[in-house]
Length: 265
Ligand SMILES: [Ca+2]
Ligand SMILES: [Ca+2]
Ligand SMILES: [Ca+2]
Image (spheres, rainbow, N blue to C red):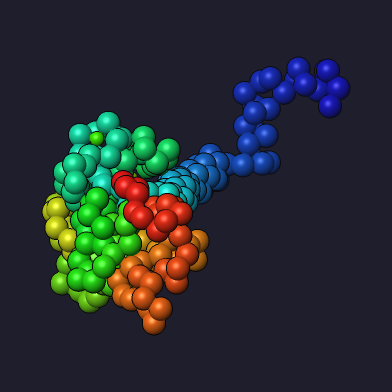
């Protein structure tokens, strides 16, 4: 269109002709409505994607934290007690100040807060975290090791407040209470914040009753014990045929060259 044609289309009649030839006002309204619906629809998946991103990040944190628990046990011969005063430092005398509290993020070097900026809940079986050797086992324990092969933990995981067992006799468990934190209207979520040794892990649900968005990982007892044994940290809960106290005569980090015990706590 040349300049003369453009200037001639600045009249009202020309615009009416343009609309008649292209889009009517009704058609334009429909187009705008469709665009609005499409934009509105795309916002919901975006929020879902953001929550998934946060959940994935928190789940990754939890797995790292579980590894850190095992590492702590390998070094110290016991699992860490919880932090009960919010400073991230383990609170213990000879037993844990409380077997449930915050994750000891300062001592373990990670796990201060989840993707929603909130503290994790951490619970440990007391006989896996105290400074008494081989708690819960009648026979001679290995010096410096809080628990032995025969030690039995006391945390149980179920798939609902009135559900079935998922995992039993768990030494330690870590919970992120998720985006919604710990809502009291959900019996399953309430089970994860009532301070007892029964905790829930089940499928995520934002809508179905009861709502549940907690993320939970736990230390598997036989994996923990297997790792302790595999690096030579042995458990003197039984005597072998040679009279050795379960370590087959090998020294561990808590025994000196004469086989006498050092205090590894
Ligand atoms: Ca503390
Ligand atoms: Ca929650
Ligand atoms: Ca509970």
